[in-house]
Image (tube, one colour):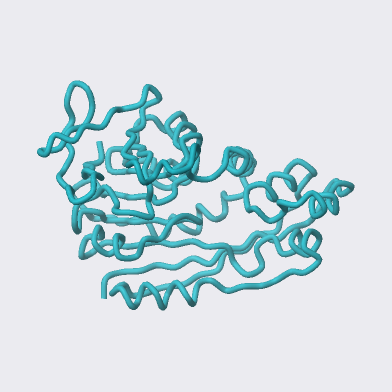
Length: 274
């Protein structure tokens, strides 16, 4: 199991397994849900009745990934996350892991060293069902991460959270951080139809600047791009999972479209300590 750290404010002690859950030296206790994940949320994380992504977005993303649209992206990322030559199990922290698609797709050979974190209970339940051998945590990845200093070999944020200071704290001296964000052409055809304007925005440059300021150097950048033909159901899922058509008037513009050729694109960034 991935070694976790207590999330109670100002505690930060390591959590040790007991017969009833996880407990730190300060006697803070966390239960394991019957589905198999660990609930490390704190009161400040529960201001909403259902924190994290809404169920509609989670389930739409689940169906989208099950169609295989991210297979090429996994192949592109796999060349970065392979870190051969280590004698010990590599430890991977997946921030905003969602319903758990990328974990087993990229790290299936090391479930003991993998931990996926998400604030959506629906997403974590799906992730635990997909890959029971891994460690799944319900927690807020925007706050302090449940890992000790310099203990993680790979931090990945694939369209998820990026708490930069915490990433740097957790990352081992020889570790890597892999970030993926939507590219400027991602779903551009869909956005042109829905919003009647295809706004292009480059996110990578801003992220590189922020990470560099925190002491993490960008050692490589790539752009992944793929063309797909989406049927009506896939179009609706794309809208739901990206929050790009929340108004009925916008959705109506696509109601009569059965298929659409769409560009998928992602900016990929690889970081190391300076």
